[in-house]
Image 1 (spheres, protein in one colour):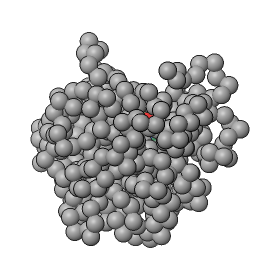
Image 2 (image 1 turned 180 degrees about the vertical axis):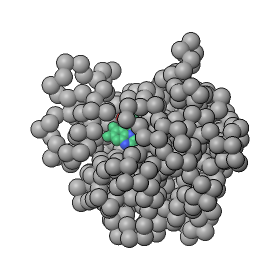
Image 3 (image 1 turned 90 degrees about the vertical axis):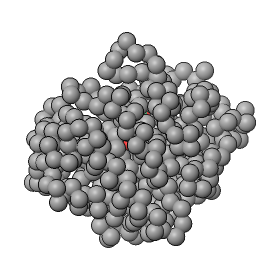
Length: 380
Ligand SMILES: Cc1cc2nc3c(=O)[nH]c(=O)nc-3n(C[C@H](O)[C@H](O)[C@H](O)COP(=O)(O)O)c2cc1C
């Protein structure tokens, strides 16, 4: 079947038309040089996955040196990164695929080893609830302003490198989320305390990046990724997120991306609430702001079902690692050729680097079946 609705184009608020509703979800390969410069291995990995998807979102790139979260992370912190970022944008912009650079700061999800002796930073001096988490130091007001400027400068660099957009990484417990979270943000100044104050930093980042985009010669996509809930006590609850979405509705962003382990997942806090989280967000999101949903999507049928609910974009992560030509095979009516398992024999062909393989085999092993596994993905 080749007449899936997910193959239809979509025109964003800024007038840019995306050729279909499939996005490659941001996934770091942890394979950049030590200074965050892109490697040829990464360029080849992305090039292989470009051309089919409407949007290809890169793995996270840090906007400043203290924002680095792990080894092998891409950086957009310095102008010296421009040549490598330009190569990356060019490798992705094949056959109309839009190249989106995900920009972020890891905040307290880093450590002094990765930061070469420096203490990680966050909204407040509160360690994350995970083994071996270091206590970060709270950013000063001047540093907060500088970090906002760093996001804006990263956006400018992405424009200059020829990207079609940036995605602000406000999810997965990193710095933008840390300001929004009552767990990591215990500040008593204008950047913390009330829900309104906890939104101030993420919204200021949006404004600063939007201002840079306004001055650009061409329309440039601004996406925002959120994690709707935290299990920490105190932590972000769905009501907080719905309030944030209402604020984001009024900002010049072009899509909202919800980071979910399972696209159809319900609250991870209130186990009695069985409504999918994306449906709750659909109720408050502006009509002209498209929603992107991710989480264990693998087959065309699964993607079509999700989009039949009115969700505008499906982001696919690990399935596009296994099957770089997913969209092309669907368009050719060659669905039987789509790979749903990963064979270690295919590492080279799939341009999967050793650090990426290691990450997949540890943190992301669930939902990443190997050809030798007993339990495989249901394709119906
Ligand atoms: C190897 C790997 C790296 C990832 N890196 C990022 C990242 O850089 N930024 C981000 O927002 N999410 C990252 N994620 C999360 C994915 O974007 C996605 O939300 C998750 O894999 C669930 O989607 P899936 O079930 O389709 O794989 C990563 C996931 C994987 C598997």
